Image (cartoon, rainbow, N blue to C red; front, side, top):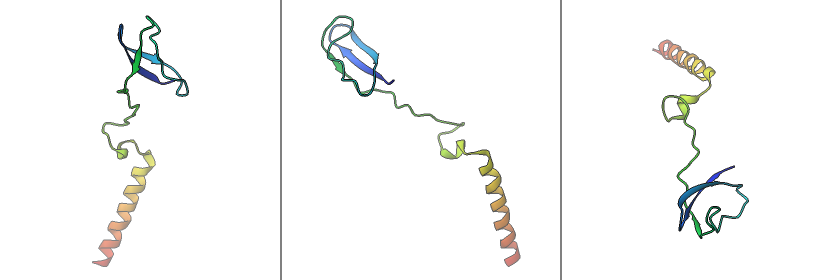
Length: 81
């Protein structure tokens, strides 16, 4: 379930777990004051590997295939020379 950020006019900011299909809260669960749903800072992005590029999380067989392909291209170029 996602976490939503709310701002209560009395209590301040709080987080609330609820289903995506649930209606936004209109009153604070603690004090009953009016609440406003905030834009969340959570993007739920998962970065894999040491960097932020898709090449950092490729399957291990990709590297061996890329080396084999580079080797074939190198052999073709030397024959044509």
